[in-house]
Image (cartoon, rainbow, N blue to C red):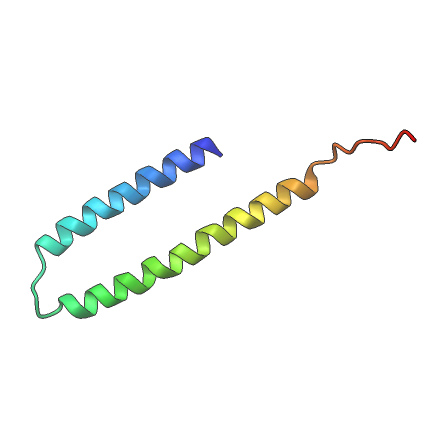
Length: 72
């Protein structure tokens, strides 16, 4: 999980850097449409990544067979 977190952090940092460079070099007439398109994708990814994390967590929880016997 730590490796995935580090990789995703680096990827998001790279995306932010590239996006900043793109916005600095873009024409203002198409800025609004491009911004809205990219904003909608970023919002969609904000929803998708936590869902994948939850699915992975539940999958690992289900496959973990370490149960404690009831010794009463």
